[in-house]
Length: 135
Image (cartoon, rainbow, N blue to C red):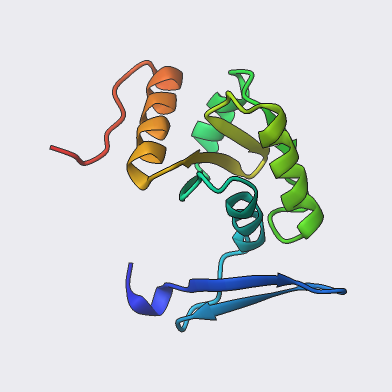
């Protein structure tokens, strides 16, 4: 990743008609920014969110009984972001959440923890050790 492709989100303010997203950098923030912002605000212990969009992984995860929410609205609305948070609160023991037809969210207190959870989930659904590039 290069600087021209990165956006540091400095803040999200929910206004009357739509939210305002304040960023530093040349790139536009991802459409999931609102969802991530609401997750971070609702779960102060969460400092890292992995978002996996592989269709193969998503299809495999959907067969595991992992909690899921319809992602028709994507991460663009405050209502959708709140729906994701509500499902996360109801399923507080689940390491992941499926956004149907969109992706898988995995949260952790650190990047290492979120990465470990992701590797474990991938290992469970594929039956083999996930390739992470670590030596």
